[in-house]
Length: 141
Image (cartoon, rainbow, N blue to C red; front, side):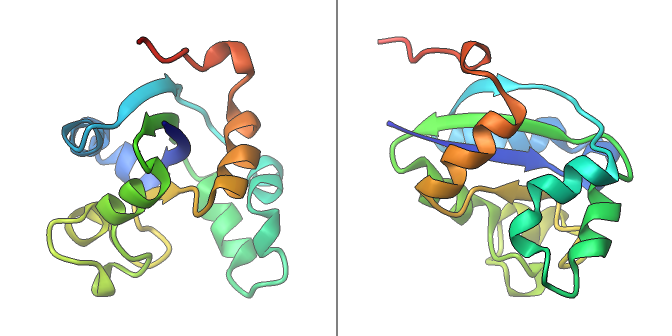
């Protein structure tokens, strides 16, 4: 079993799409292990997206991610990282496959409704950014 971080971004959260997005992950066999509503500050958004600090979209991304509440969650399942990324679709909704979250709900490349860890290394850094070990439910077997 693999875990990944997903963030339902401010645009989707404010449009009440959280339940619809969660349903897609659950229907694909992913299990929610932790979730919460947060409001990032520009500084905390900057820390989270630090990997993009030198990119031209960094300031805009931090402003957007701190513009309203978001819903980070930990999902668990077989090949969770790749499966979640497949369910989300391409970063640019114009390039996302039909039926993916971004094709169906994203407003633009930046306001693309969801974030998902892109590798096991990213997930290992991103999950503890939002959740302490005790906040992530242990897999029931």
